[in-house]
Length: 54
Image 1 (cartoon, rainbow, N blue to C red):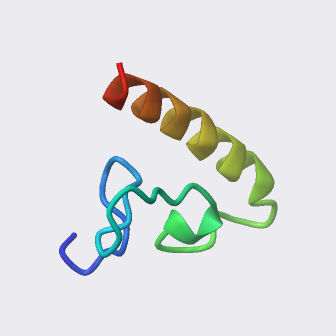
Image 2: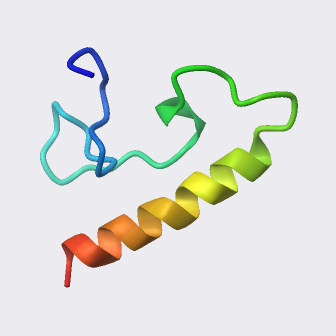
């Protein structure tokens, strides 16, 4: 999505070297209890970041 602030690897498009991994990466609020969604996206982000740095 060209209008998104964060790309698929959680990189902030306007700042080099900065990644965003929190509820702000979701286009809509992920339901009533967002903590579990944030935990899951954090696990995915950790895998992506480790793969990018290896």
